[in-house]
Length: 253
Length: 212
Image (cartoon, rainbow over all chains, first blue to last red; front, side, top):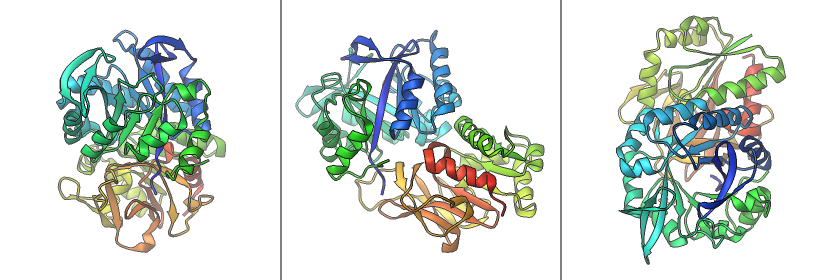
């Protein structure tokens, strides 16, 4: 049986791990490669690196991190942040990423998803959707770290990128990100029901029950969390045991 | 001993190279070489064919990599050299791929590669993540890998094997999906051993030691 995945996410800026609280107040939490190795050993199912200050000048730092991580961790690694073109995807895959995540670029031009999926296959193309509630039951895509509204309906957009060949959706609730109040369940459910590709729930995890809800109520195939793991509130093993006890199929060590 | 990972520009060989290098070092199992040259394939003791993306694109890319497929076929079918296909590299061992259009595979393992179509809409496609192996037929490359061990999968098409004796392991996903195939000197894994932590590294080690 396919297991639900737990994906620790490492927000990376200038080669170091940070975690944004609502994308401000960055706190340095260490070396990404060391953190990746620790999560590999701890039984994380995948890892995610998000380059939150991606600029043309600092791309080299990220490639170096990805390369060093891929040399030491034999588990799937998704990399996102500042990915705009097929050439960006190729460079990250060559550095050792297994999946590459588009965000703003897919909003600006959904065809880049199709182009990348045609080149490299859907299996390695993730689209990160940052959505904010605009009225009950309606969510809009925001870009640029949640600052810029686009007027695009999140559920509709999820369907669009799935049809373009995205292999997975990384869904972040901008209402919940950094709040520790739990996933936005109605949003997660709406997107998960709208597409036939896997959805990763993200944004708002504060305790282990939240992870359970993301799957049982939100319909997510995977749950992504950062702070609760980075700051040692819970281990990956505790999270898996808790989810398994709730009846969710997990890969236990 | 030389093990080649065939690079025909269909996917990322970095992780696979590192995983094979690590196990080759631990076992003192010789050199790992990533290559797209037919002459390297011809002199190799073991051949690994990875592959990511669509079946027709991979097949086309392989056929366009100067003489490499011919070298693989010669070494494997006449030379009896151990061969491991990974993901689409495994799928191409089939008679036919039915992705987008009908594409001929190597026809080494009878069967066809068809889209995963779960009856239950809650089962997402791609089949992505960790699934537990069910061993169908014991094999040297499965030494130390039991039913219940997890491997990492990411694929939307699966290999329907004609002869059950050539399916070494499967996983459950609303239906049975082929996980490992093999006969004589050839094996293939639908999952990514280089991403499958313990079981994956074990399988790589077994392959490097395998003398069919």
